[in-house]
Image 1 (cartoon, rainbow, N blue to C red):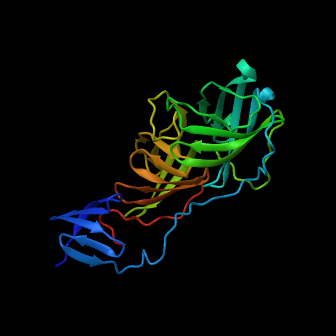
Image 2: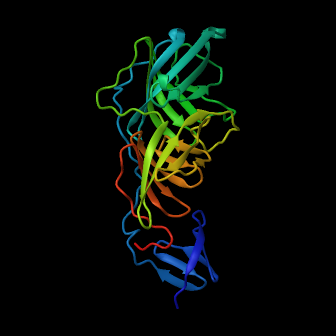
Image 3: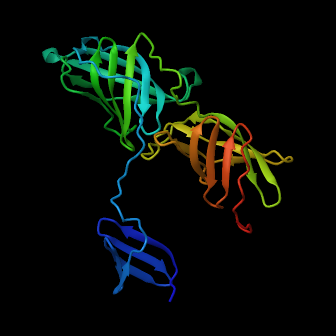
Length: 317
């Protein structure tokens, strides 16, 4: 007898699986299959034929080895440089301003603010950071951590080498984990080698082309990025930047359809626009989106993209 299940839940701590359909099946998952309501099922596909390992992409940076850390007496100043995203293999511009003053027992009291930029500082798309004021030993023998206890942002910086107008370290995200190494310099700007991929501005206007039931459908799509004062959203790395915009058909006079917000996970390249479109943003030149609600595969790009078949209701594959 064939059984069809419309959904299910899996507790991977207890290896417990529940399948929901015309009836509920309670199963216990084993290495060779599963047991459901007194029946044994043996796995016949090859997913577990060999050990599986999770190996996310990782790219090396061009910063070179770290020099030994010196005294922190000259740490104050404005620094600029780059954060290397190991997962994406891209660089993001960083600007930091550090203040310091002597404290008891030869220590230093420091405070720091900074920003990550999409594009250059002139593009005005940035995420600001303000870190906790803290007192640290002047010798700099231990890594210096910068963070926020109130959860206002998810950046955690570990400075592992400080001295001679240069700061190196590792950037972590409370949401994503290890992002990659960063290198900041005071005074002399850091230059990347030719061919290094740098984060671009998010603001863009796109041509959206998808295949309708009878003819291609072309749209103009405008996605601006603005700064808003909003409550802390723990799962939005883009905060306080906010994406909205509109799209409108290029075939006739029709009203604009507004996009009710969106966000960009710049750690992984995943993007969401409104509550309908999700996909990936490879660059400012192109991003690929899929509509979740109607299962329409779409592509966005300033140059005219290749049409994508319409897979909505009433169509055939």
